[in-house]
Picture (cartoon, rainbow, N blue to C red):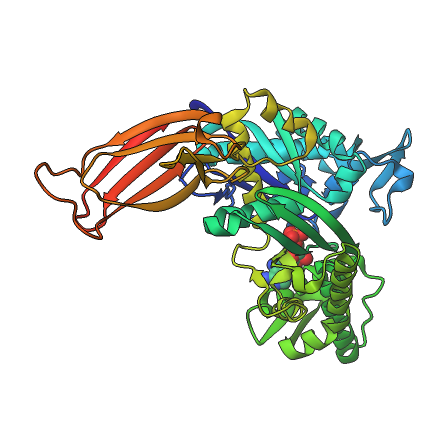
Length: 525
Ligand code: AMP
């Protein structure tokens, strides 16, 4: 592995995690683990021979259910009494939740012979300990993918966890998993960052109201934010307990009743059969997002009888209507509580794995005006991780600067931006701003000047005064590449000036629009 270090972005959901990096290509890439998974189930499983995470662990839900745990990240930092809908494996120790796990001694030739007598040892693991083991494994996968050691990460957390101060415990857990630096940012801000990175510069340089509709595994979150030149402020947020799992329930009930009608077998009290049917129903739900009709099959669902059934999209949509309407009401409440009108919403960003359901997308779209832009072209369960990677890149490059180091404590995002307007002096000594204050960097601007067949002279200033020389002189630039000695100025001939401003440099590209001759000057700022 290279000695170089890097940072990654992590979206740490209740059901799945996604990792993202900017260290492999120039783009934001999602990291696949050794199993090829881009979305890694939040699940761990203790087997007799091994400790598994992700999809491999999830596959153990039927065969080793006692020692396979999901959704442990959700209860980090909570007291046992504050946990609703407790997992059956959850126990209490000093007021805190712990999972009882059966740990068998590993096979060896000696105890293989006396297999019958081997009793498992019951060990208790806190949700924090399970999360550390899960994250250690994710970190290793990411290091294998990137080929560099990972030093820091930006992790997304739900707004409610930020408001309840629960993310400090989470940060501590992430550091124990081997990440030296950790910043947490809110999920909606990460989603906005992912789309800001994709959009054209004009999209970034403005004041916008953006609604983020996030249909995840457990709940639907609707959040309205204001993006003022890259500074993202949450105006209001609402949540309702409708998530992908409720749409799974619709299918579980549908197939369960079909199975009962056909075979006179009720599986309501059969936990193993219900787990099998739930896994199959979730797959059916995903297929229904891209096909008009699909089947659902489970081998030996109960009493040795297989289940095979089909459902079409129209029926599923009809059964889902009530749940989707609850999500729409939550959006209406968010807008109502924000003092912003529906007509003033510029963009809607749709994210969350379950938002892939076409009916959900079309019903959300129908709430808004025609001119409101619907953004849904980033994979909905990868957008948050991508936003985190963008913030991680910024922090990794600036972590030695105190203002950026402070962000590690603040859950805030920061886009590099221009603190004072940059412009040029005109013939009267006035300051003509070209790139206004607060513009997010990097930024590009164009302007044109006449080709008078004399050297071009620009004095660049930064500041707020209308008089050029009351501002800070950045650089004086002379360009004589376009002067042809002994020739007269050509009427109407223009020189196109393109300014590219990054946090480090101002690059001036000048091009004669007629001859296409060009020249480039770089100024360190
Ligand atoms: P998230 O919490 O954002 O990872 O979303 C997880 C939820 O998204 C789970 O309930 C998944 O079943 C659901 N999901 C993922 N892909 C699809 C799909 N193609 N169609 C419908 N639901 C999906």
